[in-house]
Length: 240
Ligand code: CA
Image (cartoon, rainbow, N blue to C red; front, side, top):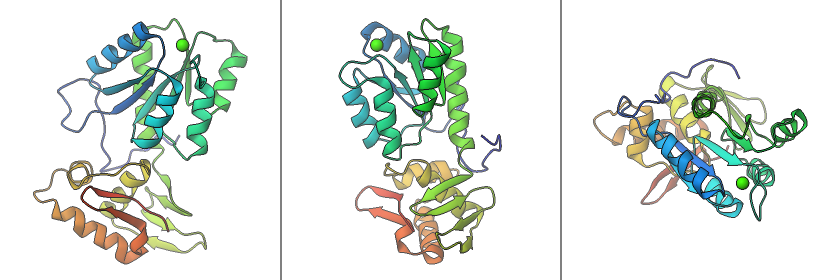
């Protein structure tokens, strides 16, 4: 974690109504119905957009098919255990920061959770303010991890605004080009609408055509494959 901020990337407040950007999407995987409802209420109250998956299979499906800003995963789940779910997501390239909740909080179990790919681990029962503070930290980490992102085999260095391909060749980017590619690469599975990208990258500039213009600039520098067009929907991360 670098602690550096990424100019132009969205920053999320945790107070509803203060923030004009879309709420951070948080996937909650929890089989205990009461606790699941409580987590959804808590996260909604904090201004996030949580979605509850009641078991590991649905958690895996949602984790792979939609873009998330953070995930809260219960360790003890039926069918697919929480850490197996987490490992499956990591194996498939999902880098969304994850907080694991567990009734077991010994140091050895905590290490298992971190080794499985969790950023953080919180034992039940937990204090709600502590949970929210940990989620805020995950969301900051989500953005701070952006300075090095992958575009297939090429690496995007957001801070240096440069793409380094597998052969070591460097291509310099403008700030907007870099932020556009970083936004797509932070959630490689997600299709972004032009409206999403206008909000996140271009500060709600007047016309969605500015998005197409910058997609064109990126492709001209890096090749058509760097951004994929999803017809009728928008754009998603491509590969170099
Ligand atoms: Ca459970």
